[in-house]
Length: 182
Image (cartoon, rainbow, N blue to C red):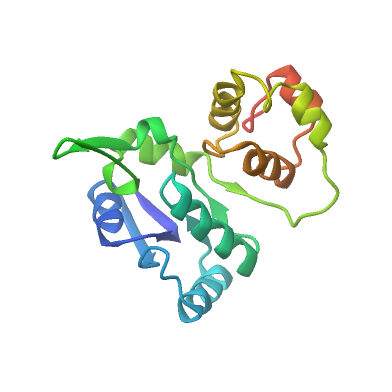
């Protein structure tokens, strides 16, 4: 399967894993060492082929994703659920694109999202709280379920709230259990 867009990943092992399953061109950020020159490359690719940001489901991956989305509007975003992007390596749990299987990679790419520019919030913070997505003993599990249903990855309360607003999700949509595919 050939992917039209350039996929931005963190490192060489991410590229190698994607190329195991797909005909794809990647651009590596060298982890959090994302430079202005790399951002310029991403801007150029965004104009000609399109860009999919596919970083690890961890804090550095989120930081890279935010920085690219801020600098290059209109990028697609693919998210791996952290529970599906890991393996045990030398007795330690390793998380990331390089450890994901074919099914997880294909599902993440199938559900790519493009954030709209920040505007008026469609989901207020008080509505977010009312939905139990923060402040309750099971809020983390609720956020995980919402993040997976909407294909935006797992996140803390503030990050999930921002991602849902970038997708223009409303309280009614969350209450109805609708997802990003509907």
